[in-house]
Image (cartoon, rainbow, N blue to C red):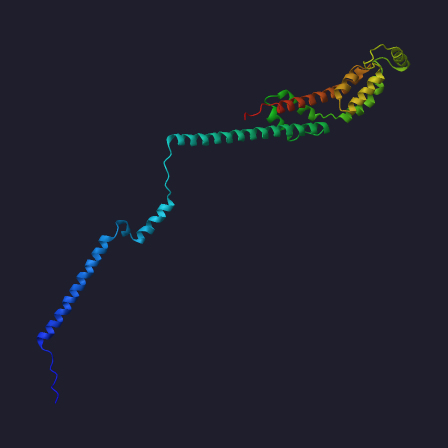
Length: 264
């Protein structure tokens, strides 16, 4: 018969447990030794974690290193900015001056057109007073007065045509005696070759041509020296007023064009 298997005794079980404990302790000590050796072998900069590195990168890229400006560089930049501002200010002043000059010339052009057409000045009257009344009050007053009593060149020509019969004779010389005297004056006339004829008919012809070319001043000189000039006083007054108002407009235009330019 086979012998029965007996359970292990108490001393045998104690030795087995002790061996397991000793093995565990030995493995633990070896693990600590390996960890310590690894830490000692690693470099200090390797100890930074990836999170720390990622946290430092954005700041480094967003804030590039810049060197502080020296006092000389700062003064140079300030001087450059001030120079550019001064240039912009001068350009602005020049633009304003040119715009003001253009406005005055436009007012004078519109005024001359109204004068030539015999139309009232309307809104141009206060504009003239504002732009030129301070420096040229006499010319402005002359223009305004003429516009209220307008005279046109074609009207002067029509009136002159009506006055022609009376311009050929002196005051008190009428009828057949006037014809004889006029013919006698034109029988023999001594003058230079380049001198205009003093014959009344020639003077009247030159006056008509001058009015056609808008040379009213020449027409006034011819009519004023004719035999019957005393009978054309009203015509001469209108024609001289026309000449005077255009001379005033010419003075205002010349003063505007020749006004000092703003410094560049």
